[in-house]
Amino acid sequence: MSQRKVADIPHDPSAIGHGHLASTLSDFLSRWNRGVDNLAKDGKEIRSRLTLSVNAYTKAEQDAHQHVVQSGNMVTAPGADPGVR
Image (cartoon, rainbow, N blue to C red):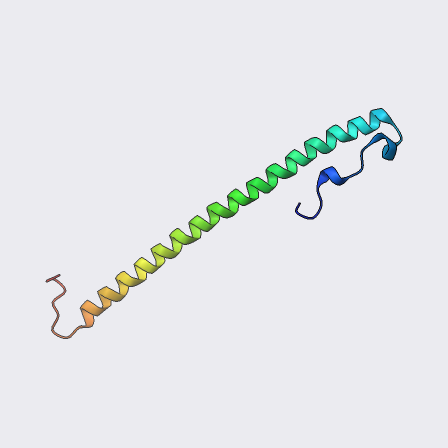
């Protein structure tokens, strides 16, 4: 989409050779362009939501890892009573 737009497709009567066909093609290209724009917008929204999900899972994994490390330290510390904490 950033390199070539649907609207760049020639659709004026002189390029098509028939006024009604050019008008129909112009309408089609307009709707096609809106559809492509909507798909691109949807793709950006999906990317954004997936990024948020990745960040949430990463944080949850880091928190779980930290909890396991802290729990392991309490168990392996000599003389430490895990029930005290």
